[in-house]
Length: 328
Image (cartoon, rainbow, N blue to C red):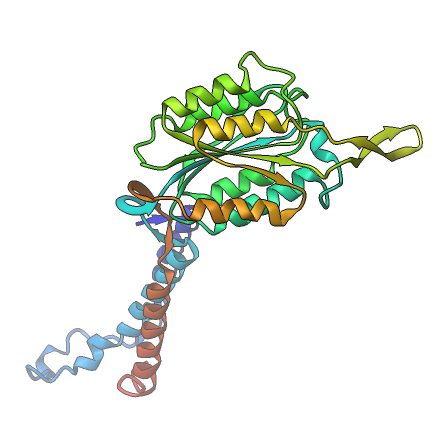
């Protein structure tokens, strides 16, 4: 048992002066006329048990106050780890966040549209290990493979263009994703690579990264994001943001080659429906049992204590108005 607000436990010290006040009040209520001894007038066994029970309401009241302080401190059950098996595949999302992803041929722009559809995909696959790699001029892992999709979705919200050097390093992004999934024990290992341009940076060629992926049995689905022709792109000017139509240039031959090399499939995403078609394809893939380690969250345990407080106060009220009503 742990407490979320342990400082409230110091309030238990208030029970000391309350107890002292009760003893002092009890002493003051005693009769002032004293005799040497009344022992001669007492008959054994005639002392009523009510005399001894007269302190019970105070004891119940103090216990209720102590429990109320414990409730304020928010008792919680301890955390624990639990191993379990589930059905799923391992998936790494490799997402382009270069400045060209701000083009608004997809609404509100390419990057936000890709994030929204990917988040819906994650919510629809609760049993899968899913990770996230982002890239532009360089690449880094935003989230390793995990079944804690709440954390993954929170990290998705923080993605924005400009987080890393601009450019399009498709090969580097794919190689980073491969390094994150290559040691997986799942029978189905998948990378979903999303980009809107052509490889123009990085030390690793996209086709070379695809060959590495095939060596580890990883299937790569590639997505070219962008309409055909031109797309409105925001430019910062002295008069604010102005939009100009720029040509959409996606290296489709390379993306198709990556998909063909690894046994995946290439998609041209001109809208959200194209992205969703990828997830339909992934749902048809073979699944395998994976072992996951789940972390049980803290559970609030105040309810039972609150019920006990209510019971103590109810018993005190009944005693004061029935059995002990005439006891001062």
